Length: 146
Ligand SMILES: [Zn+2]
Ligand SMILES: [Zn+2]
Image (cartoon, rainbow, N blue to C red; front, side, top):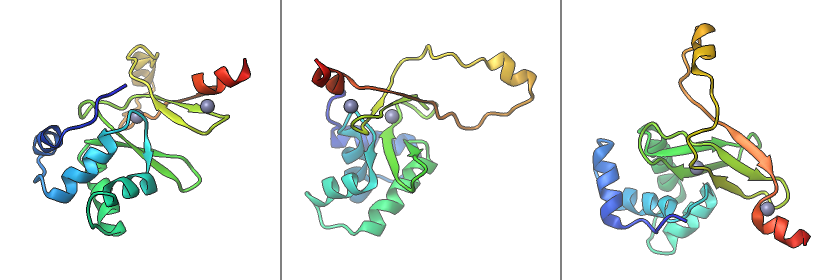
């Protein structure tokens, strides 16, 4: 489990990405960084709104900005739903686990998932974005099976 993100850490991440640490940006980043799993846009909106008066469009714009500047990962889930999670650094496009029973997503921080760079290079593919999703049953749902 990741610790809750402090406002200092959020400010630091924004500065490292070349972004001005406005109050709204700090609040949005803290809302995403405060959970160890990818949050949906409405969840983030609720978390930010619990503490400050901010409109939906502003929050969504900040989310897009943070994705653009590689502070956050965006998971496009096909059904128009999107989820956001924190990158450890700008290269961090970590894989995700999707529980097909409870529909929860988990961020996986294992760097040994095989991706054959040589094979990709042999195909002359210039990979710009990696989005790996594993599906199965999460520990909480497995527990309910017993
Ligand atoms: Zn589950
Ligand atoms: Zn993630």
